[in-house]
Image (cartoon, rainbow, N blue to C red):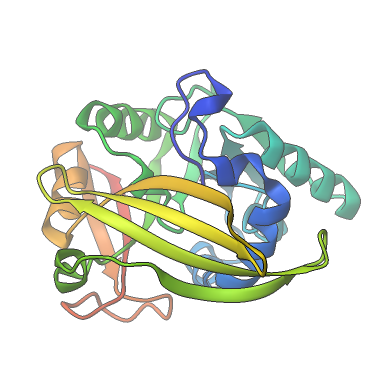
Length: 259
């Protein structure tokens, strides 16, 4: 999952310029979503494009069941790791560097995946327009666009967000214990949550800080994004077990096709 990129590496969220930390955290915090995609795509998945592929957490295992697997990301450091991992296991997955809001690969896909809240890094209306136009241009006639976004909790967003501890882990590269905490500020007018991750060493608070922004997409707004950009939602699930979406579902898992 990557943040914005307007051609300058400084525009990429700091976490996505640090694949070691990203992979460490992914081992502890990434969802158990692989089985969802495996069941959805089936054993003959055809041509698959994953947007915001990172270091290949999903692209590499899904490539074993795809005619063609392409991962796209705007963070060069992440792609270096993904390509190294692909070479190590003899995977045919291809990895392309591009901004998933606007890209051109000169070919079409049966599936375009935007996993694990990557859509929430898109904060501007013009960027949503570009993203859906790019995806539509790359979908085969019967292709599907699959998006994984969280369902927001209005009560939690309305509360002042003091620092809260997420986890403590041993960083094997530094051989030090790190406590990761999160603080945030929600801009209700723009529906954007400004998030800060604080990494504390035992003797050094805020040893490292990562900041990002997340667009808050309530259910009706997410559905309208698809509809307004010429897509029809064919299924919407509330969890990776493909249970129906409802008001208390933690996830918004949308499967859509071009209208």
